[in-house]
Structures are given as structure tokens and as C-alpha cells.
Image (cartoon, rainbow, N blue to C red; front, side, top):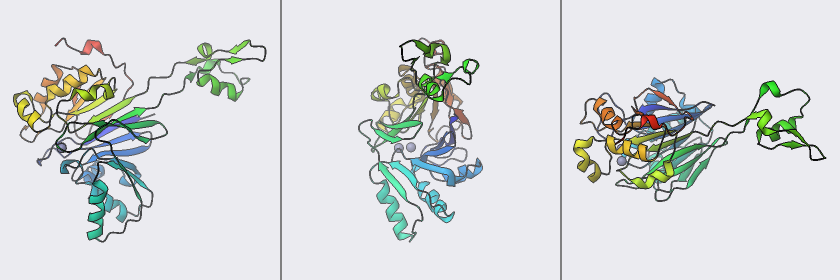
Length: 317
Ligand SMILES: [Zn+2]
Ligand SMILES: [Zn+2]
């Protein structure tokens, strides 16, 4: 099952010509979800040939403009495009009120329903259940209520070994074997064993999105072992004091969280506009956690069920 994230924007609040405000497109098989929707996100979707009409839902971390000012434009365009399917919307208290007011004064009757669920920004709670994954909030330490999102794939079933499967095995037995159940006859004799006919299921994959936040170890138990972590890195170490005072993190703090949470891979973004190039963010992060990467706009990162302990990738610091 394809499970990936496409970076649409990895800048922060002040506009720059070469980075866009926060937004990512999460894809699970053929289902698309937006995570944050900074200004102009709908144009990024056009750039990358993603049909906005196929979006099932939108997750908004918090109500700073660089994370949701693109939402009203996107929703209006969906309406103009004739959408009638429900749209799921997750975000902090007040988001529904803001949208209602904007639609009220633009006299825009929506032809589709927005099903709004308020996020819990103080405790990690189950927010959404998809047939293949669940989403939990990740309370973040920011100036206003803010929650990241943990997309946790549900456990897979075991895999049948094709060569072992003959036509004579009833379908129900195959289903039971995939569920990890041995098959016995009425006399209690083992007919088919899980160990002989199946292979273990691949470990479930997960994606943790954490923007915006200052360094906060409270998130570690929630994101521990995530296959892929996106953590904001607005500043570099030279401005660590400013980062904390402004409820943001540095690249090395993001990497420290990645290391302590033993994640598979780290993406960093939300770079301050004061930094013209981003290579130095990567250098700083990799000094702490080697498997760190820039959340490069336009890049799709596959979420892989790599063993989370890539110990060889962790320098001794
Ligand atoms: Zn921001
Ligand atoms: Zn913010």
C-alpha cells in the first residue's frame, strides 16, 4: 500500500520567494489528505498535478496564518468545482467559526458538507479512524493551542506463502491463517500451521507531523519509533534562545527529539525566512541524528516500515 507525504510548503510565516508556507499532502493508497494549508496551497496542488477534488480531509495544526490561510481559498475552489462529497476537517477550536464567518460574508452557500472535528491540543487522543490507519493528536508547545498528528497504520495480516497454498484449502482456513490462527480438525490434530503457511506481517508504518513547537520532550512517548517524523526547525543553534522564546525549535533540537524518540527518519522544515539557504540546517541536524533530511518542497517521501533502530545512523553525541 503506498503511504507517502508530498511536501507542498516548508517555509514559516514571513513570505519568501523560494519557500511556501506549511502544507503537506499525505497519501494512503488512493486517499489524499492535506496536513496544514498555508496560503496558496491550492496552487501547489496544481503545480504537482494533484486534483483537489480527490481530497478526503484536511488536518490543521493551529490557527497561525501560515498553517491555514490557504484553506478558505481551497474550500471556495472546491465549491466552484462542483464538489458534493463530504470533506473531513480537523483543527483547533475556532476554525469552524472562522470559516463560517468567511462564507457568511462572501455569501457562499457550500454545496458540500464540511464535517469538522475539533482537535484536542492538550492531551493525545484518537482523532480519526480510517480503515487502514488511525490518527492521534500530538499536543505541541506553541504560543497558541497547537496539535500535530500521528498517522499510525493498523497492523497488517500475515502473508500467505503462495507456493504452499493449494486449491484444496478452504477460503475460511486461509483467512484464519492470515489472522494468525492454526487450523485443527475435529479430532484436534493440526491441519495447517501459521508458521508453515504464512510469513509475518510487515511492521505497521507511522508518520508524525510536529509543527509548530518549541523543544518539548513530552511528545517523545507519543511519537516513539515513528517510521518518519516531520519536526519543525525554524532556527539554528545560534538563535536557540530566540527559538524557545518564540515557541519554535532549532534543527539540532528537532534532531534530538528524533534521536530520543528513536524514529526511523527525520524531516525538518518551517525554516525562518532569515536563512537564505537550508544546507546548514541539515548539517546541524545530522550532527545529532544522521538520518535527517530537508523537507524539500516538491519531494515525495515514502513512509517505510524500516526498523526504527538504525543504530548505525546514530552518532555518539
Ligand atoms: Zn508556523
Ligand atoms: Zn505557529
